[in-house]
Each structure stands twice: as C-alpha cells, then as structure tokens.
Length: 313
Ligand code: NAP
Image (tube, rainbow, N blue to C red):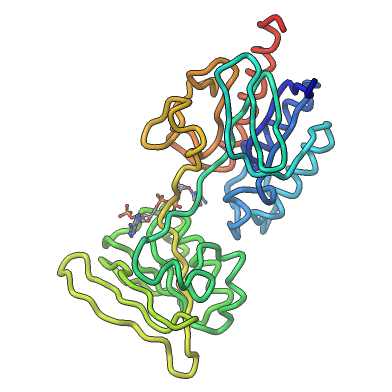
C-alpha cells in the first residue's frame, strides 16, 4: 500500500518551512511539496529589515536558505512536484502531482500568492523584456538605465529603494497622490535623490518589438494619456510592477471555504475541513509578512499534531 504521511505541506515559503520545522521536531512523518524552488514570494524580495533576529543586510534568499537548512535538519522529506489536484474530505487526504500521488492524514496548505499583473496591453509580451515583477532577479539588467516602479505599497517603495543601487534614476508611478507604504519606508524613499514620483498615474500600455521601448501612462484624475519613450542612447528602460498579490488558491476552490479567493481559517489555522490547515499569504489575515507566515506555520504544525493525537488511526 502507498505510504501515508502524517502531514503533507504544500508550498515551501516561510509558512510551509516553519510548519515543516515544527512538524519535524514533533517527529511527524512529514512531506513538503514544492513546485519549483523554496522560498515563495520572499525570494524575490531584496531586503528584509523586519524579520526579528534577521541579519544586517538580510535578503529573501539568505533568510530562506537558513530556513530550508533548519527544516531539513529535523527530517522533513521534500519533493519537487506540481500539485494538480487534491482530495481533502476523507480521513486520508490525497494530493496529486504531475510526478506522483501522495497521501497523508493531514494537509497544510502554504501555497502563498503570485504577483498581480497590471493586465494592460503589451504586458505579457514584454515580461522579461523590460517588464519585471522581481527586483532581486532583474535589477542588474538595468545598471545605469532608467527604471520605473508601478505601485505605492511597501513592496513598490522598498524595491524602488533597492533599484537605486543599479539604475541611474527610479520613478515611482502611483495611482494616488499618497503612498500606502509604511511611513519609515516612505521616509527613506523621499530622502533618496535618485527617486522621483509620478502621482495620480497608471501605466495603461507597454510597447516594443521584442524589447520595451515605450509605455503609455494615464492620469487617473484627468484621464489624459501620454507616451514615455526610452532614452535614445539606452534604447530601452525597465518597469517593475508591484501592485499586490493574488492568492494561489485555485486548486482548493469549491473544496475549502474561501473569501475573495483567500482561504478562511480559525486562529488555529484550521479550515472548514478536519485535518486541513492553511497558513501564510493564501489565508484570510490582516498582515501578510514573513513573521506572520512563520507563526502560522508553527501553529498549524502543532495543531496537526494535536489532530493526529485526538483521532484513532
Ligand atoms: P499592497 O500593500 O496591496 O499595495 C499595492 C499597491 O499597488 C498599492 O499602492 C495600490 O494602490 C497599488 N495598486 C493596486 N492595484 C493597482 C492597479 N490595478 N493599478 C495601479 N496600482 C495598483 O501590496 P504590496 O506592497 O505588495 O504588499 C503586500 C503585503 O506585503 C502588505 O501587507 C505589505 O505590508 C506586505 N509587505 C511588507 C513589507 C515590509 O514590511 N517590509 C515589504 C513588502 C510587502 P492604492 O494604494 O491606491 O491602493
């Protein structure tokens, strides 16, 4: 008969890795399933200043590398597979991947969220050709070029500050005239000579044949549009889009309770299905941070242990 794990964790971001650490330390037979590489959203984050105990100049990848190492030390098994279907209602949960089928008594959903696209013409075609959603990954391509950042939240403003290490000028384009980012982050941006602001504006089209050469920006107050072209000598420029995230929850639609695409849990990370938990950015919560995802993971693993102990198998 197929192996039955105590816990399957789907997703290896901070929430999944913390769950793996706690489950491993509780000697639960644990399988962590990750699609591509560990880390989730946080590996596309250049600087992390607010994770307690984080190192000076901590980056997403450096923090995640230590989390992975720690989870592995306590015996979590790991498989790289893309989950395509789940059956979560029975006592034994079934998780189907492209490479295999996995079974467990409990499941912790830690699938996170994806960067939200603007959805304007030219965006898809020019992604990776001037349009990016990851400063850590792509900033170096824009050494000494002009760069624009779309968005006014923590991600947009923090990544704009990071991009000033590479680009000769960074312009934050925001749809209102006031940033949403935390005040401490705003202050750093306002004090940075390399950062300009374009208020009450949104990008409504990207243009270019194989590489981004211009974009249309529309004034959100007047509705007027204008085209911004690449500097003639540069031939191109960069646009980094940070306008929030979409929960990665399609797999669970109609199977667990959701609100606006986010999975509903109680404070013990329990979903409406016995033995099924959700942690991190994919669940309904007020603060989506590494520290809250990690806390969710710890709680879910301890609740999974409790659930396993309370039931006769
Ligand atoms: P966010 O807080 O949801 O901000 C999204 C930004 O994009 C907002 O400024 C929003 O404008 C704008 N926006 C949304 N849809 C848009 C559209 N269709 N067109 C143009 N602009 C649009 O997202 P985030 O900055 O990625 O942050 C997500 C979560 O992670 C937040 O909870 C944040 O606090 C957290 N985070 C924390 C840190 C940190 O603490 N260091 C770093 C990164 C992220 P409006 O302001 O007008 O709504």
